[in-house]
Amino acid sequence: MSRNPNHGPTQAPNPGADDAGAGAGGLTRPLRFGYGTNGLADLRLDDALALLADLGYDGVGLTLDHMHLDPLADDLAARTRRVARRLDALGLGVTVETGARYVLDPRRKHGPSLLDPDPEDRARRAGLLVRAVRVAADLGAHAVHCFSGVMPAGTDEDTAWKRLAEALAPVLDAAATAGVPLAVEPEPGHLLATLADFHTLRRTLGDPGHLGLTLDIGHCQCLEPLPPADCVRAAAPWLRHVQIEDMRRGVHEHLPLGDGEIDFPPVLEALAATGYQGLTVVELPRHSHAGPHFAERSLPFLRRAAPAPGRTNRSGEPSATH
Image 1 (cartoon, rainbow, N blue to C red):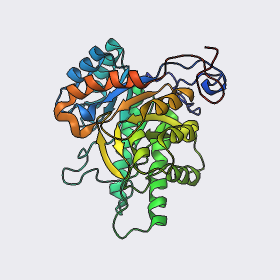
Image 2 (image 1 turned 30 degrees about the vertical axis):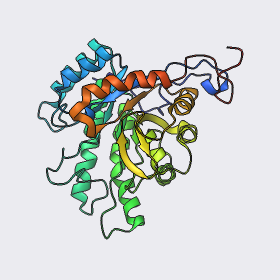
Image 3 (image 1 turned 45 degrees about the vertical axis):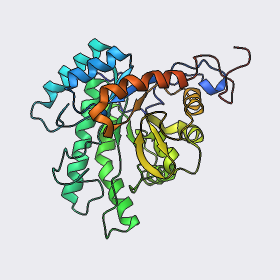
Image 4 (image 1 turned 135 degrees about the vertical axis):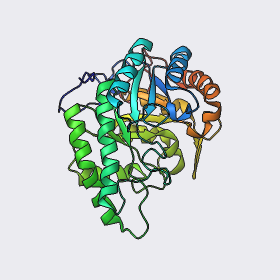
């Protein structure tokens, strides 16, 4: 049975957004920070969750993978129930992430993708995402993250976009049934790489209610024409999940917070002003060898950079009367 409080085929709102709108003179709520299990891959899942709760995180970005919650396990439903109980006991929220490198194919990183020439391969990836939606519903997750994949050699863009839209159709149907938004991430080097590309997909699909956006703040710094804070404001109506790390312009390398070029206070101020109340998840998958250290370091950094809860004016800036 689904634990998702929004179970049902209605359009998913910006998770936790104030009805009055923080940018319309409402009260800004504290941002909710999480850490991704793809950055804690050397820990058992129970140990990773306990660590994050002990450090004071609000939630976890749970990557479905063989070392944690294996989406291909025969006893997936039973494992999911155990994880749900553990999350409840620790008071952690959750987003389900689907960026495991080799969960479907031990030889191809992130393969097969939604863009593969073989329709059976595309169906395997779509099937994994449908499973992820069901897991998310059972965990009470606020979104399921996914990405398009790299365009295969010899494939033209029109064909790639058509494949992507067709492959996502059953996933969006599952998301609508479960009441869990599907949050597509623009990923450098992929077909869907930018916010503009997200809107291409959205229009191609007819703007379905359960299609949302994962915004990776580092990716904004890497390749978007707008500064990251402006990306947050532009993405706000479709924002369903946020990933965060540091990055440098033009270099797709996830860096610990403070080690790159991002000015975080304006980004987090803009995010708070949108009323977004899903998780903002630190994503450092290549730092898993020292995951506990970076998890401990990241949360105080984010809390220092985040705005204090308070009243905002229509521009999203703190009110002078507060």
